[in-house]
Image 1 (cartoon, helix red, strand yellow):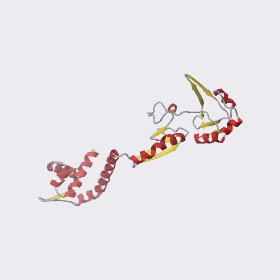
Image 2 (image 1 turned 90 degrees about the horizontal axis):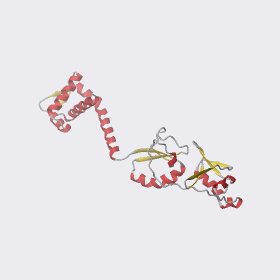
Image 3 (image 1 turned 30 degrees about the vertical axis):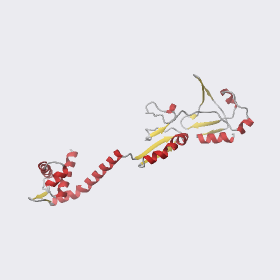
Image 4 (image 1 turned 60 degrees about the horizontal axis):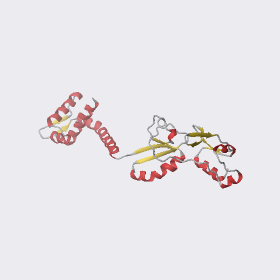
Length: 238
């Protein structure tokens, strides 16, 4: 019903601009008789004449002028809004909100961002560094970068990088004070730096050999909550 009213008002405004039913009908792509019927139906609903008709031209009545002044600007806004939506379909635009931990931002996103931003100048990227692994849907993110084991089963996941290798490392200064561990169990005797993830507690030190998996609970004086801090601590030999 609303769509019918909008079409009728659009026809009314076109006739008021052209001041001629023939030209208005051509512009609207309808027959002159169909356009005349549309205007008569609109006048009947409003219970008042909107046009003064002569053999050569049509002009607005006082009621028609008021209707034109009332609905004309609104119709222009609608047309501009629809044109803007069409532009979105033909050219990607808008804001993409991404949640990722600090490592993923630097190792995965940063290398790809320059080319992406250059290819899509109307897109704005908003990156939130988050070790708490935010609820992507609940907090209205468009995408999230997660390690494979941390992706919820109901989410659509696409691999965007290779497997991330993990290694036990220490600085030369540390090994000047402590023996090098020969096997995972020996880490229990070492001063390790733990990584605490906000939503998961301590990051598990997990080792795999073939089909066997072993988790070692390590101890140390320092606990951090980001991978860059972890690397800095190891380099400092703490």
